[in-house]
Each structure stands twice: as structure tokens, then as C-alpha cells.
Image (tube, rainbow, N blue to C red; front, side, top):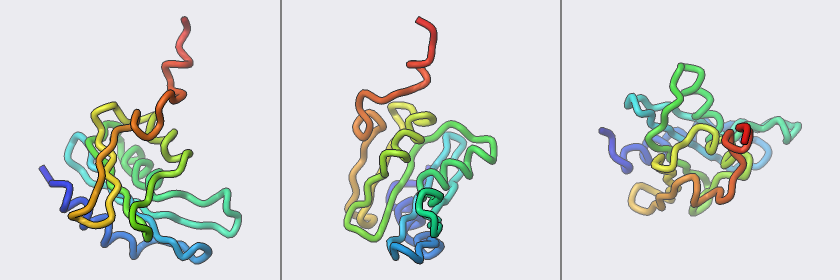
Length: 133
């Protein structure tokens, strides 16, 4: 299986594909699925800022569009020391990530932090809240 350092290298290289003409803040994300496939995403800005797509949702959506819904890891890198996912991305990840899915927020391949979805979004709203009681 591919290790965290290699996934981080892929994510850092992928930052060049970011479309961020307004903020000049590039973000890249790479997801590794349970099947071992890798999907990349970048932030894609829009002059109407609410339409902007974050890198995390971009990568996860690409995997889902290819029929994959089980995730092993996600790597997030940006133009700051450690780029944390926004609230919308955390809620989006919550829909698809299990507690054991690793969320890796990296500065570079030797400096990174590993979380799970409960660390980043405690007391979250999930599909379980919609189940009949």
C-alpha cells in the first residue's frame, strides 16, 4: 500500500493544478480509497465566491463519480503551514468517512498530523440523525 509520504508528495505536486486567481491560495487534496485507487482534487475558485469548490470535495467527488465510496485516507496540503478543511468540507467528509479513515493535514512529507472525522467534527450531524427513532 502507498505510504503517507508518497501521498503527501502527490498532493504537493498537484497544487500546481489549483485554479485560485482571486485568493492566490492553492489547496490540493488526494484521497486513497479502500480499493487502493488515488483521486486528486484542487480548489477551484469562482468570481462568485459561494460557487468555489474546495480541494477536499473535489477529490472525494471525483472518487464517488467513479463509483467509490469507501475511503482509506485523505491528504490535505495548502499554501499555509497546515491547511485545515473548512466546515463545509468537514461535513462533506462526515457523510463518507468512517471513524478509521485517516485525515492527514500536511506541511510537507515529514511534517504532518493525522486525525479522524470525530476529531475535526465532534457532535456532528449525520445520516443517523435522520433515522426514525
